[in-house]
Structure formats: structure tokens, C-alpha cells
Length: 302
Image (tube, rainbow, N blue to C red; front, side):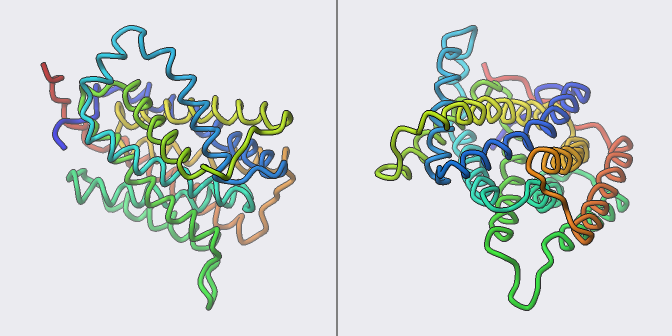
């Protein structure tokens, strides 16, 4: 894939977008659990979320230059990004049905590890020894939360870990999205892909939701749109190391929201693992400020 997804180096905008995500994602977890409690299955949940999100995006298609951006976008780049995004989202929706939000969040913090490795191998991004050490610390914390035994780890935890690896692919894909692919085009093609894939999966397995589920479906769709908007902006305009580090604030919100809203309180071992993960994020944030600036973006195609 040619071109760079870094439209311009705007670390403050990218950091703000990611910090907004750290609050939105745990709230999305609450919506998923509320729908699960009402008997809504994972496939049905994903399908309605995708349809509603795509419906929210459609009116904007004819605003400004969005239609031209969608028509001229690099379709193959969007297929790659949408494939990773659709797959990783399914993993987390599945796991959040039964696992505490803070536990899923903690396991999910293996994503920056996968992202850094991928950025180093694929794009040659430099990572200092301290950065790698911090990632190892975060991984140790993740292992504490996973607590594998002789039989391995639970199915739901394994699904989260798979989703984390797929999430790294999503982050790297949007990071290298060609400059002519606008943020709206990224969201449009991802949402279209989700509506088609989840819609096909839901054939025969979904009907009209109960009246009490509709408010949570709308909350889920609105927050999901906000999360994907923030993720797209953050990884296109800032260093993947900086954004990955700021994302660690999400675990604090996950713990707080889980405890206050759902009465999910981590035990001692989980708490220790979370502390290691947070410490890793603080170290990465510090070393990322000394990281070299990203390469300048290539000009949009004519």
C-alpha cells in the first residue's frame, strides 16, 4: 500500500481523540452488557449496531467532499482496514458478554505490543530499549490478568487476545491509509463492511429488538461511531507510540465505570496486573516524547 495515513503531524489533536476514546470504550462495554442482560445475542447486537451506525453516516455522504472522497478512495486499503476492524470488534463484543470490563480492557492492552512490533517490522519505526522494556512490563501485567494454568486460558480470554492482535492490524492499516482517503471514507467503508458482514451473519438469527433494547442500541451505535472516529483521527495524525501510550488511561476508566455501574471489582492479582500495565503506559508515554518525528505525508493523488 502506497502513501501514508499521516495526513499531518498534529499530536495534540491525536492525543485528544485517543483520550476521548478511553472514556467512550468502557461506556460502550456497559451498553453491551445491558443488551446481553436483555437476551440480545452477539451477532444480533453487532448487526443492529452496524446498521444503525451506517444509517447515521449516510446523510453525511452528500455533504462537502465526502462523496468524492468515497469514490476516489483506495478501495483495497479500505478492504484491509475494514476486515481487521470487523473481526476485532466481533471478538470484544463476544468477550464482554461475560467478562468484566476492566479484565477485557487489561487483556486488550496487548494491542500496543502487537502494534509496536508490526510498526517496527513493516514500517521501520524506531522503538528505544526503554520502550521495549515498558512493553514487556505491560505484557507481564497482561499475563497476570489472564492467569493461564495447565489447561491454558479460558475461551473468552483467548478471544480477547485474538482481538488484540487483530486490533493491531487495524491500527497499522489506518496508520498507512493513503492521504486521499478522508476520515469520512475510512468510517464509511468500515461501517459498510460491518453492515454487510454482520448482516449476512445475522440472517435468520435476528428480529425486531424489544422496545427496552432500542435505547441501548442507539447508545451503542452512537458511541461506536465516536470511537471509530477518534481512533481513525488519532492514528492518522499522531505517532503510534504516543497514541498507544495514552490509550492506557482507558483501564482507569474501565475500572471506575465497572465498579460504580456494574459492581465489578478486580481481585488482588488482577489489581497487580493492572498496575503493571499502567506503569508500562507511563514509561512508554515518557520515552515517546523523545521519539523521532514521523515521516512527512505524501501529497494527495491528483
